[in-house]
Length: 216
Ligand code: GAR
Image 1: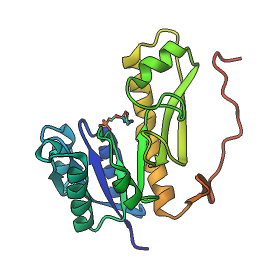
Image 2 (image 1 turned 120 degrees about the horizontal axis):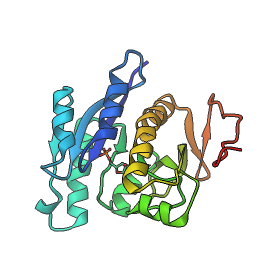
Image 3 (image 1 turned 180 degrees about the horizontal axis):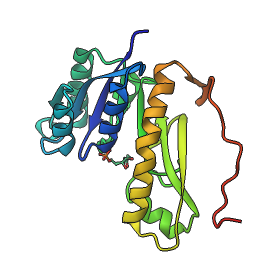
């Protein structure tokens, strides 16, 4: 079976990009990374991608007069790479409605909360302030409003009484690195279909148990 040609957009560290690229390197994985694109020259993930032998490109948003011009350059680079799917992985730029529409149901994002709770920035601080007992991460198809769109997969992690934003972010990030490859596999195998702004999964198992925090 042909592997799904996937591009990854990053702005910084690139640890989710690395998790996706490692998953794609496994024999039989149904997707391949054809390009990693960063909007910042200093994105650490660019070096990680290059070391893994993945083609990279930098398109600095500051080189463009406005969002529409930047998004047009991004769109051209993605098309030139032959990408069929775009994965946002810590890509911290708002995308125009036109760009999002052009890649509708062909662009996915990971966010470090159980959406629709805590979209946007300072996610972990807001989760701690709200006193939730679980947080987690979400992979979803991208819609124009930030961190919205049909949900493909989620991972829940417990919040501990002693947590600060750093410890919570680390625990969620470890879950992100498991969740994003799982979601990419579901999409690449055509098992995560959008129907009426929800995702219908095919041949995917739902866990039986309820997690309690504190433990009962
Ligand atoms: C990740 O935690 C990702 O979920 C988050 O940025 C981090 C990027 O880390 N994304 C968002 O907050 C999107 N709204 P990484 O560069 O190491 O993958």
